[in-house]
Image (cartoon, rainbow, N blue to C red; front, side, top):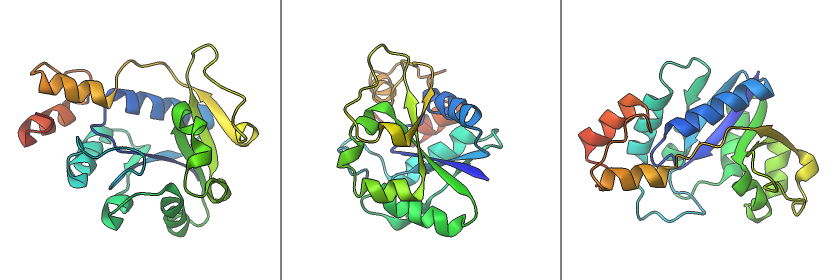
Length: 192
């Protein structure tokens, strides 16, 4: 099987995450996409980060109904700072005969050389970069250009930051996040 690994803080997961994951799955011929919420992201602050268990629960709710989407709690179980190389090695132990594809955004790709052990990451998985239809967005500055598969995804003007700010402002997040995620955020009093 061809398994896409889609990690992130998912703080919270929104419809943009689902749309681009489905586009990548179809375009790259992936059998399934495995969403992996981080315990503690290495490159982001944690001030607005609810507990990892909340984010894991929201991702599980978000992917319900799509048989090609699954969720792994491996980084949440491991705890601490989540490094991609550790997660990929764990996924190889779990899926020893499958091909792994790491799905990242163009912004992460442009900083990929600064990740923990990028060469080891590339030895564990093929790199799929979600390319945006923005003129000049892709740059020849990366030494990994010829080692990545670029998949054009729609430009969706929804971000987790926008969702959090909308909740804080007391406004509706309907259609920004899946219905069950919206209900969970309200029930748990997140992002207020």
